[in-house]
Image (cartoon, rainbow, N blue to C red; front, top):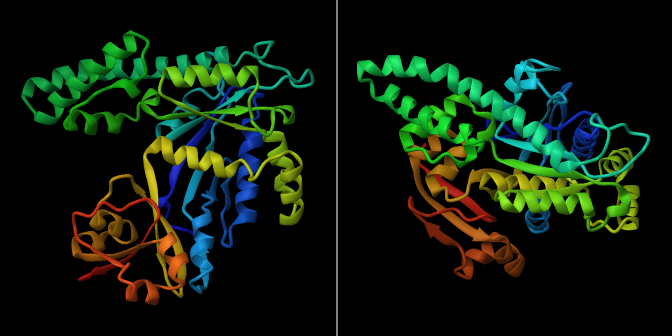
Length: 371
């Protein structure tokens, strides 16, 4: 059973040509299909849904018998390679831009390896230059969108409509940032302005995770001179990086479980790249997971960090949010300490939480609703 797509976080993989972007996409989606017990895999030529690895699911399964275990999911979109001039239609141009507008986060693959057999589009490996090339194209696309929308919004705002006034205010703030060559991630909108900004799907407003594609020589730490430069840039801008070896991941995806584990051990890695990449994407987006567990399924559900009990229940079914009465909650550690839910209840470790409870990452929840 595949989770409803509305519960799947979508991340767009971008990068210059020949940085390993599509190799990584193919490896992650193939590995995802092998790791899951339901049909995750490529669902379109450039779209794949992969499970978010979470060892807590198996810890729960060790104590609760169930028919299936369902992890949270990450939807990956392999966006066409970006070239200089993409914002004005060069290369895939507007097609790639429209794909980015629809994703929740951007996974920016940066080439951090040397290989004379793989030509770099700009002649030499320079990850900072590559990052700046792509970020400039995204910035130029946002400038064009704001410059086109602002005069129309200003004319419409003369009617005094509240929503249009919020749109004008947001666009004016956005223009100030963009004219200073700053991304719209730095925009500080009011709630009304934020609603207007979301409708535009600005490219530089998307949170970005820099994915450093390294060679095997940089493993297991995943650090070399190129990576350090990317890490420094990300740190300056409050971003995050993760290192992967796309070539190795492609090889791992073709192996069975035993051989994969052996190869990972040989290069000093404890897990395939999908795991740290998915965790980093969740941190980037401010997400967490809670679990439901029973004889039919043990399942991870994705929620924004800070979600209340009713909001978390609403992820399962929208009716559950309004019909929420209370939640019965315990932790994975409680389950391991006492062996089963019956013992947890008898030991007084099962918590009864109301509508104001903020669901914590790793909670195991049973919701009582009137629905």
